[in-house]
Amino acid sequence: MPILLPEDIREAFDGYAGVTDDRLLLYIGMAEGLAGKACRRDLPEAAHDDYFTILSAVGTIHLPHTPVVAVTHVYEDASGTLPTELASDDYVVEAEKGFLHRAPFGSSWYPGTRAVRVVWTAGYTRTTCPVELKAPLLALTAWTLSRLGGLGISSESADGASVTYEGPLVDGMPPAMRSALQSFVRYGRTGA
Image (cartoon, rainbow, N blue to C red; front, side, top):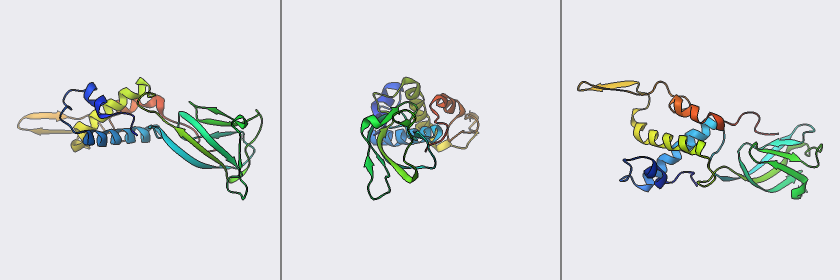
């Protein structure tokens, strides 16, 4: 489900009252996809079911999407014949950072290829999205709606009128919009 809804666009910007919900949802999806790519993670809340390869004695798995909303199942020896589901007190979640720590402190995850399976939910909803992310998403959606036909054009003129678009795009969007997303970029490893 998208973070933004058509009514969010209509409330924030004049001129979209006559645009259908389907069209607005299409452009919201495009904008949220561009933002997610720039931030190196999925932004809308979604369920995940991932396997992690543990190469050595490590106590932390880096989940690739944040914030972590819930971890519903964790299995060790996940690719083996008898995977073991861990109790919730066998691990600790750092939701904002996306860290899954083996408990108690100092313990390590079961080693091996696809050794740990994590079933979890991460991302933002309309109600949990911080304003620092919502504002750039709104602006990126409006920009996508208004500029899609002119991507790659630095300037054009017709009948004496001239229009200049913002300079080269960064991650498929104007640099100012990309900068507004900077604090949400996910750095570092995405697996254990």
